[in-house]
Length: 129
Image (tube, rainbow, N blue to C red):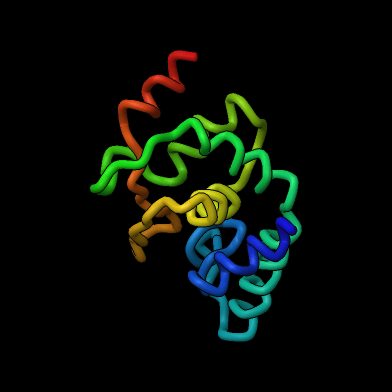
């Protein structure tokens, strides 16, 4: 079930990988073939992350939605908050779980991170727990 849910998010956001939006090149210059191979590998890894995805979907039930985007925190920052409760997850898993959970998203193509309509107040409450 989770793999199908992750695939549905990838269908919605085709550039989503385990890293987030696009791939991590670590400063390497990759040719087109290398980029495709790295992208496919990272997306396959994301598809294999059902357990982390399920834990993240459950954790996100504590987060309230707001009408606007929370520009104070990106997916990467919020994933670190979630990790305190559920253990390590990738940025891509967090993004997929949040989109699956119905949060609106805004992609910043200058980074692998995404902004969500997540309440800062509810995130701060989770920091205190």
